[in-house]
Image (cartoon, rainbow, N blue to C red; front, side):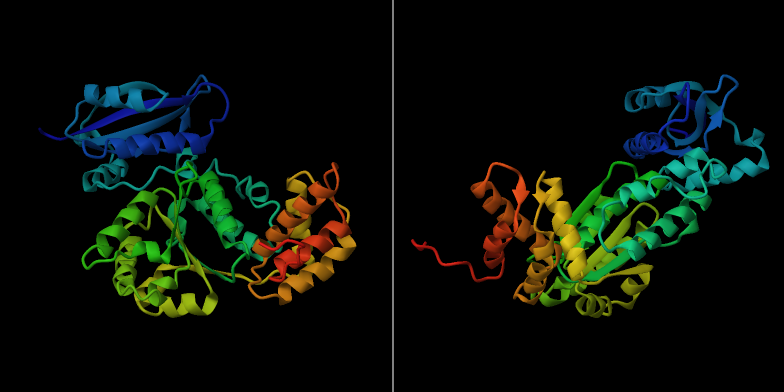
Length: 386
C-alpha cells in the first residue's frame, strides 16, 4: 500500500495542567504498539481558546486517517480530532524536517519535557528533593543527579548525549536504592517513560552457558529495559565468573548501548577496582558511560541514622541511641560487614528481642546488647544447641 502522512490532535486535558509524565507514557505506548504500521511524532502541547491542552501529532506509514483513529482510541483515553492526510507539497519549509524524521522511522521516545515544551519546563524540575529524600550520606550523589535532571528539563532530552552511569562502592552502600530513586526522578523529567521500568540483573545473567547464546541473551535483556533503566549489579562477574562468555557479553552490550542511547539508561554497579578493570576489556564500553558516582562506606554516625530510620519505618522507637555508636563500630570491624545491610540485620534482631521482652514497640539498650552478638558471627551460647 502507498504510504501517507497523517496529522491530528489529541486533547489531553480539558482543564488544568496535565500530568505530562502520564501523557508521555500513554503516547509512548501507542507509538510502540503501532510501530509496525506507522511511525508517530508527537509535538509540543498547545492550549486552545477554551484552555484545553492539546498534543498535535504526525504519522507516516501504510495507513489511512480512519486506520489511525481506531487504535489511538483504544490505546489512549484522549479525545482525537482533526485527523486528515498531510500533503507535503503544502507544508511550510520549517516543517519538512519533521516529515524527513518520520520517513527515517525509529523516532525517539515520547518525553514529558518535549510534550510540555521547553518554555513550559521549570528552571529546575520539581520533585527532586522529594524523590531523593531520606537517603543518608548521599548529598553529593543527589546533587549530581539533580543537575543532570535540570539540564534535561531546561533543554530537552537531547541536551545530554549519554545518560549511562557507573556506580562504584562496597556492598550495602545504597547503589541499588539510589538507582531505584533515579528511575523515579528521570520519569518526572521526561528521560524515561514514566512507568518506573527498572530491569535489574547481575553480570552473570548476561552470559549463557553455551556458544552462540550470549549475544541474543544480552539483546533480549537490553530490549526489555528500553524506555527505562537497565541496572547491572556485580558487573565485574563478567570477567571473574569463569563461564567464558564475558567478553562476548561486554562487546554485545557496547553495541546495544550505542543503538539504544535515546531510550535507555544503563547503570553498572560493583566494587570500584573490579568494575574499572572490567570496563577496560572494551575501551568503547568505558566511553558509553558518561558519569561515575562513588559510594563510600558509611560512617558510624551515618549507620546510626540508618538504624534509627529503619527502626522508625517499622514503627519502633529507639531508646538506645547512646549505645548505637559502639555497636556500629563493632559491626564495622566484623567479618562480612556490608554497611546498610548489616545495619538492617541488626534492626531485625533488635526488633525480635524487643518484641520478646515487651509489648511496646521500643528498642532498648538491653535489646541491642542481645542482638549484637548475632550479627557479629559469634551468637551467644544457648542452653540447647541446634
